[in-house]
Amino acid sequence: MSLTPIDIQRIAQLAQLRLDEPTSARMLTQINGFFDIVEQMRAVDTTGVDPLAHPVAAMQDIQLRLRDDVVSEPNQREANQKSAPAVERGLFLVPKVIE
Image (cartoon, rainbow, N blue to C red):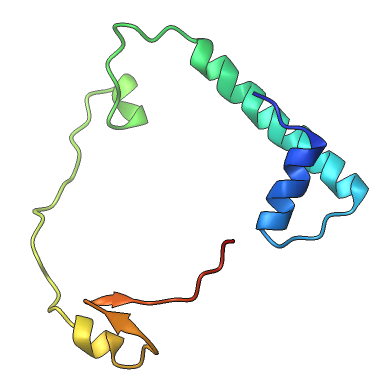
């Protein structure tokens, strides 16, 4: 997959950025370079390779230090939402920012 200058203009418009021509060209090169790296990684055959939980696990046996998943803070949702301009069913309501 590679992007075109029109794609970069659209992304900039959605992000509400103004890019001059040299910056737009540089962004196009950098993003397409990133996509090239992703395609190279996708081309690697990983059949039969177990995923690692931690990169060091490939070199040595490692014991992850995990803690119990327990609630340690009280629920303060209502107190935190008192200053919000709009709340509905426990969720913050915000204005639409993407067209």
